[in-house]
Length: 184
Image (cartoon, rainbow, N blue to C red; front, side, top):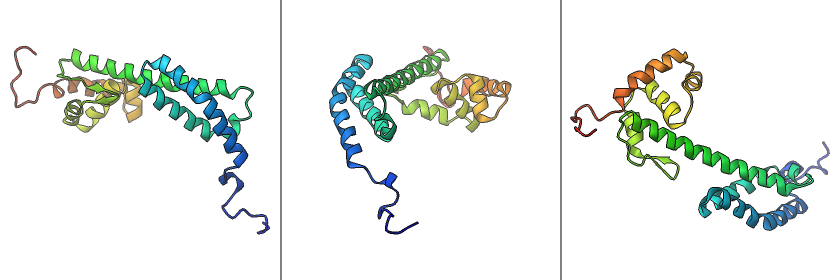
């Protein structure tokens, strides 16, 4: 390689092209408000919409060298934004289902999901389980995976996973040293 042609900062790929950057910034300025509006309509939450829009444009920036050559980059951006919103919605639904499952098992759960984070009491209850059971409970009830998916993720036979999950029923109840209240 001829040293006269070498870029002092590494490959040309590492050096942002001013034209490329200005075209990204121009598109972001023109599309960002509309993307936030779209996401607000989908999520119903302005703060979530703003976060998702920022995530969307981070993806656009990472792929800008390809995206800039699309006939309609604005439509691709909206597809990314919608996919991000759907992913957030799926996670929220999954967390609600996990709460319902834990409640149906008689597990005391107080607002286990708040803004996408499980309550520390839930994690503490899961943390008291043996390691493998805690992993399975987390995958099945908190990550909304099927027993077969959880078993595959942990390298277990589905029947072994079911056995572990059946054993955990008492492990997530009230602390063994505390007597069970009559109303629970």
